[in-house]
Length: 173
Ligand SMILES: [Zn+2]
Ligand SMILES: [Zn+2]
Picture 1 (spheres, rainbow, N blue to C red):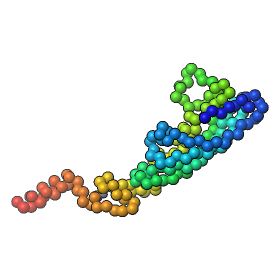
Picture 2 (tube, rainbow, N blue to C red; picture 1 turned 90 degrees about the vertical axis):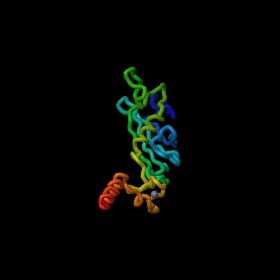
Picture 3 (cartoon, rainbow, N blue to C red; picture 1 turned 135 degrees about the vertical axis):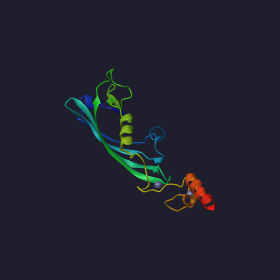
Picture 4 (cartoon, helix red, strand yellow; picture 1 turned 180 degrees about the horizontal axis):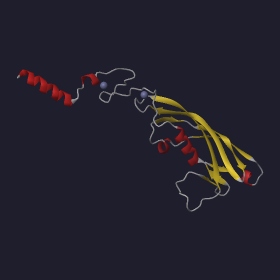
């Protein structure tokens, strides 16, 4: 997503208003999350000049539907955040190419990397439907928030099982 700063650089405007919707690439960006639906997020802000530097300020908000990390139910999460960053005037050779700083390229900047990074940082480490989600039974797959299953009660630690047999054998002697 390229933004042209020509108006600002030529001093015809003191500020460029930004108001756009942007959908993050759910396959690439959210590989560590299970996303059901990534709707476009709303970005609102401006680019302005301050002490010979160009500053980007953006607020973003929207909703993303995830799957709960434990029980796989759909969870609609409100996403929001704030970005403030300086635009660097050119890449120096020392700087890493992976760096997600904004650089002026001609009269334009490319916002995608910055925006992606900011949204990822605003997400929780793990998305849960509720703090104490009980998850799915690893044996029968039952959603333990809704129903109890009998798997846990029937399962006995195999080491304890041996011990139990050992004691009962000894009693018989
Ligand atoms: Zn859950
Ligand atoms: Zn079970």
